[in-house]
Image 1 (cartoon, rainbow, N blue to C red):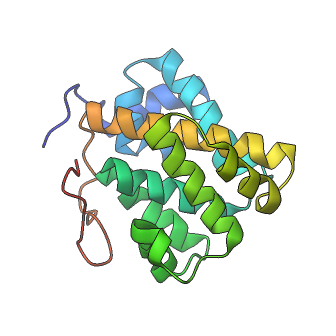
Image 2 (image 1 turned 120 degrees about the vertical axis):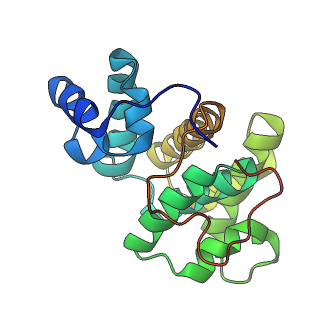
Length: 190
């Protein structure tokens, strides 16, 4: 698979990102090499992504990474799954928990907060919103208003990012192995 829109070269991506105030480390990532074709959009996407990943400290990082991994798995986003597998590992999620998102209802390693967030992801992807019953579980186990708002924004952001990655057919960075750890992927993965 090759991307539908040509990515900027790494050099051009870094130069453009520098002009826009986007971190050089991000500019080297294929998703940004694609996004930087539209600088204004890249800045907006970067602001939200940076807020959710690095500056907003409300929702527990474990819950955030579990919800991203679930979105990557359900939507078949090879790029999202692979990138966040590495990020989840870096922030201390055990590999069995990350793999557990694939069939979370039958995995015994998740607590009530994990299950509430994963159910919220599934509701959103399937119905476009979180059901009342799942919302009550999230309210009981995820946190207060700030955490709940962030959870909803995170689900929306990474769902949109999955669509962007898949629609633009953004490839993994050269040398990055897809779908760790066991090579299993959903039938509709892209």
